[in-house]
Amino acid sequence: MRLALYQPDIAPNVGTLLRLGACLGVSMDIIEPCGFPFGARDMKRALMDYGAAADVIRHVSWPEFRKTNAGKRLILLTTRAEMPYTEFTFTESDILLLGRESAGVPPEVHDAADSRLLIPMSPGLRSINVAISAAMVLGEALRQTNGFPQQAPATQT
Image (tube, rainbow, N blue to C red; front, side):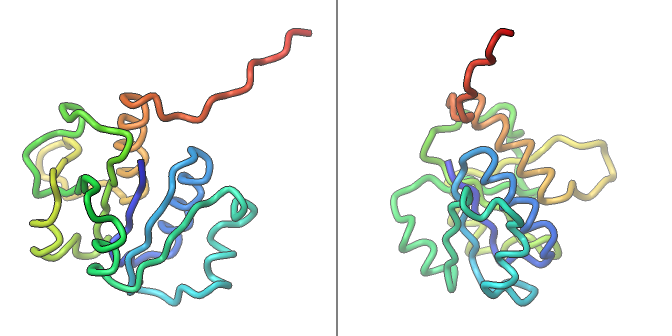
């Protein structure tokens, strides 16, 4: 399971998602350009002390990301989908793709997805924060695939 961020706009969301990935043992892809400066210093600040646990690959473009991940199933989280994520069957090798906070993904990225999923919401509301959306769907995907990190057994005292 991987999380991929398409041209993210908001640095704190990227930091939250990098930390989520590190804590859950999920690798991350960042598809550039980002809507903010994202150099080595920014990466270090976003990861805080989770840097050693994070597996992050930066891609200079959408075509480069596609070339690197050829043959893997791409699952787009979008408000323009019909299937709720709770009705989808995930596999261990899926890539969960999240679009830009301001604009989602362009048509060519939308069309490239193998599946498109939505989070059911109350009528009239637009969207849930991208980091919260990722956490919800990733949690279900990891549950289905037994992909959560294994906890060490608690010791009895």
